[in-house]
Amino acid sequence: MYAAGVLLGANVVVPLIWGDVYPFTSAPMFRDSPREFCNYRVYSIKGKQLDPADWLVQRVYDGNPVGYGVGVKPPPVLEQEFGVVADEATVREHFQRQLAEPRHSRDSFVDVVQEVMGPIDGQHVGVVRTNRWRIGR
Image 1 (spheres, rainbow, N blue to C red):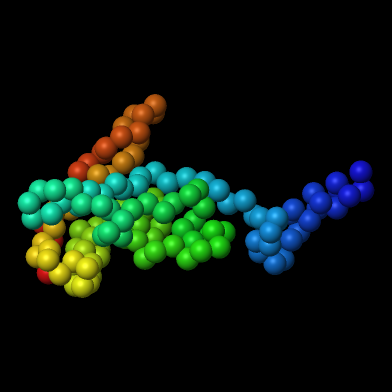
Image 2 (tube, rainbow, N blue to C red; image 1 turned 180 degrees about the vertical axis):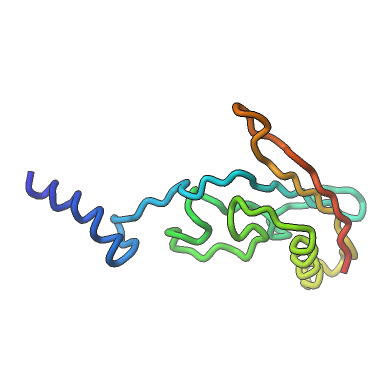
């Protein structure tokens, strides 16, 4: 009984003093409760859909703030904070950096579709708007 009390107390005290130390955590999962998020699709010059991970627009969100408590630094994806909708300038800058990479040397431009997901009504979540951009070097 005493051991259980110590363990419960440690679950509160350890994260407050030292942060996340296995197996104790502040359990931040889903604490950010975003109102909107984005899905991205990337298309080649010929209209072929490309792998989002090749363009660093895949989602790395796991319920925690990005990079928190995962033990591995996530890749430098466009979505650095789940729930923040990137504006056109940010999306263009991200893709222009990607187009400058040697692995994309054959691509002169890409077409990017940003679907902003959010509440449609009190019961449903879906696409609230879609943005399309052609982004070149």
